[in-house]
Length: 337
Figure 1 (cartoon, rainbow, N blue to C red):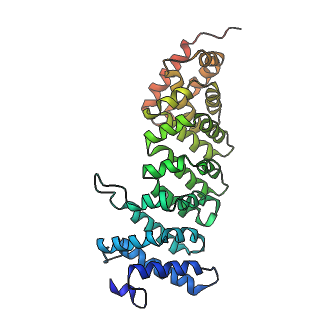
Figure 2 (cartoon, rainbow, N blue to C red):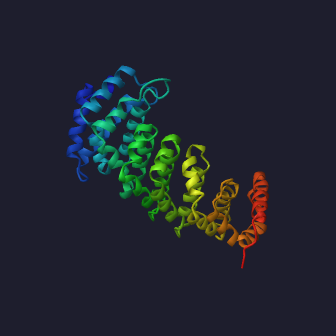
Figure 3 (tube, rainbow, N blue to C red):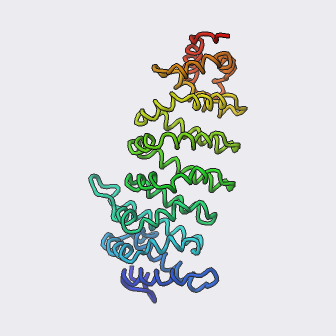
């Protein structure tokens, strides 16, 4: 691999120092510095990840990784991400990915050093990544790096309990479709990968979370509305979230939101609303306030269910679920005038 360093730094220390020095000088209008950063990043990526017939060597990975952390190279890369060209940004993602995946395939191994580095030495990196969707040019790559980071439970917890987490409920409504979609992917991963941890978070933040996601479900944007209700259904389907679920299905505000979904013109939104409704009906401990609201709207539910064409979704389980919900609604006493 010596050919990589011809006319370039020869040791891991020199390579990282030279890369950092170039990043500090990086300017949109200085092509030479841009080219230098591109070249050094490519060298670093090949050492860590390999390329074509070049296999990465474990001793070289270890040595270069040590220098990356000691010289805060990742921090310099992230704060200059916007100034790097497209290919260099991809190299930054690969570098993060390789460092995050060290030890990942081996059982009973501690998290790789980058996890401790991000949480204890340079948490600012995570905070910068969390703000990524605010800048169009680096929003996608920031999201990709962040999703690699949150595969680790400790990093996921750091983000969930940081105030910047709540910004993602705004980012998913960004008018730029690609950015909004990427932000929703990150939000979904944050709330679904580490189930036990998320359960604790939802218990600690029930009121704020439900209010926030209900606001998304009220969005005029179809994609935002549908993705938000799908996320909610996923959370409500997880047994780990039992305390959250009990609160959710004892809240008449949530039942009213469900009724609005059933009245949508979109069949897909009606289906998502139906999935929520079936859990209201399957709850063996329905409170009186929930029963009162169901009774009040019994006729409307019956009309919806009799016209709800489940066969168009090509899911045989829906027919049985519809029959169950219909029977439960019919068992409700008629509304007293």
